Image 1: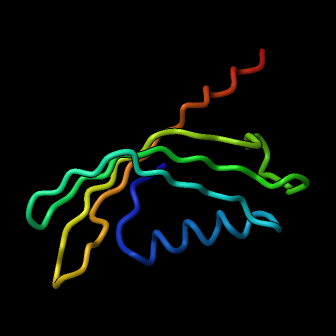
Image 2 (image 1 turned 180 degrees about the vertical axis):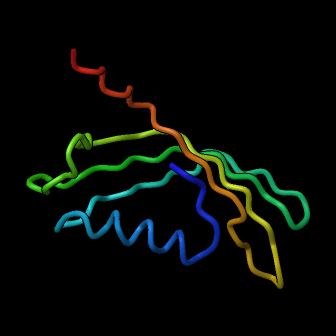
Length: 98
């Protein structure tokens, strides 16, 4: 997946994800640790993504997925803003069919 920059790109990505099925998939985030120093913070955590029972998933999409994430936060004008976010899945990629 190519990097996304800016609110509009991020909003569009999650809009597509939420519009793939009715009901939409459920994303759960759990922060495991946060380190802060002045106007910067780093959050490490785990995520879990699940399609509800009966939801029509995109071809090849697993019913559930989970993994790890890291977020770098910056404080600007008294507000904490997400500056960078990266995640990866713990679920193995499907093996190619021969």
